[in-house]
Image 1: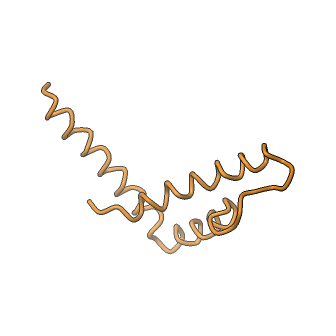
Image 2: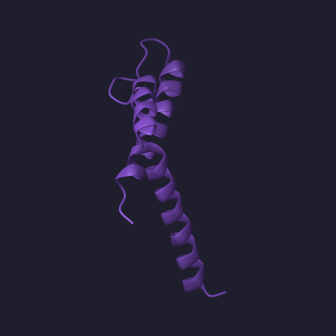
Length: 77
């Protein structure tokens, strides 16, 4: 298999995954879950916990997941 074919297959997999994210979160139920996750995962609030760097890092990890989900939903295919 050529590099070009592998690249095309990889892009098709990514596009399929983007479609699945959109199918999941763009329904009425999915939108409610997404809204709840945004609140729980510090999407719009600070992740810093004064004097607890471990908790801050944990919160930022949650936020990073939400940023990834949101980026998937904004991608065009």
